[in-house]
Amino acid sequence: MLVQINNLGFSYTDVPILKNINLEFSEPGLIAILGPNGVGKSTLIHCMNRILKPTEGTVTINGKDVQEYHLKELALIQGYVPCMSVESFPMSVVDAVLLGRHPHSNWKSTREDLEIAYDMLRAVGVEDLAMRPFNKLSAGQHQKVMLARGLAQQTEILLLDEPTANLDVKHQLEVTRMLRDFAHEKNILVIMICHDLNIAAKYADEVIMLKDGMVYATGTADEVITDENVSSVYNVNCHIVEDEGRPHVILRDPDGTECRAD
Image (cartoon, rainbow, N blue to C red; front, side):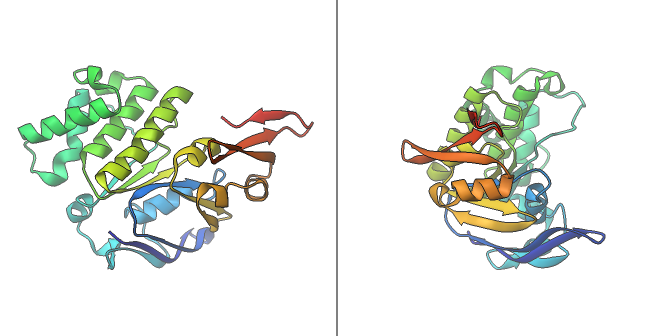
């Protein structure tokens, strides 16, 4: 699977959001997209999955522009899990996860679909919620079910917009580790937007840091998450230490006090 982003730009009317983005992904693994609010992280994901049409440049998968794929054809190779879902109509959790199987079947779920749905609920640790009403879940439970739906789609590429946004620290670690392991075991490309520098540093195979709508740095965690880069992109004082062979960010308050970045 080869994903190429060439000279990508996107603007709302005359306001540029993304400018001259050039990236290429050809290996499975976990990719973390970092950057401050409003820098264009979600816009980049939305250009990759056809929610938005770039105003400049292209996104191609195996040489074919994503804009030329039929929606179901694209859904067979690329999945997407949004940061938030507005679904409020009543359905069970397992039925919500089964929606991820529709690209592989018609409107009637098979036994295999059901087995995959339960496997993914088990993978994210919420199998016990299978028969609960989806619209009655907590924010954290809802996020895990949405993740299970994305995994149940069984695509070669999975795009995630802040998949750990509503989870506590323990579950952020568990889910991100699971995504990394899933990417390696299933030989797929997982691209996630992340706001936690240390979680990205701990688990990501590659890190992309955006600034002002452009790629500021890309590479391994220790190449990208540096004192200079974090200070420049986030406009904060920090100190980077090594923890189990990976960078760990210690933020400094303006008064000089250190605090770990959670």
